Length: 67
Image (cartoon, one colour):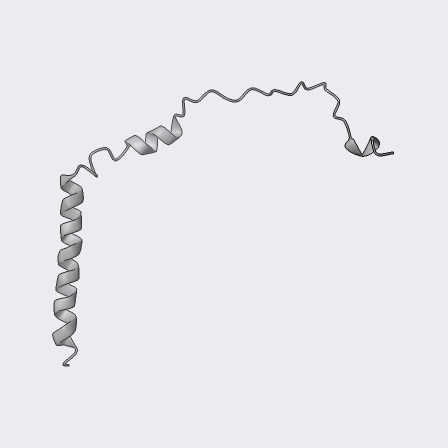
């Protein structure tokens, strides 16, 4: 039972730290735009990369040069 004399204050301190971290995040605006990041990943405006290689181009095999 003596361990409760240590565990209860430790639990209260950790709870207070968690509450302080939550209030800091709330005050600094961390929860203002909850859907912005989710929408940005779905609607990507980057242009697709162009294929540089021609589709009919023959690929050379370097092993033929050694013979």
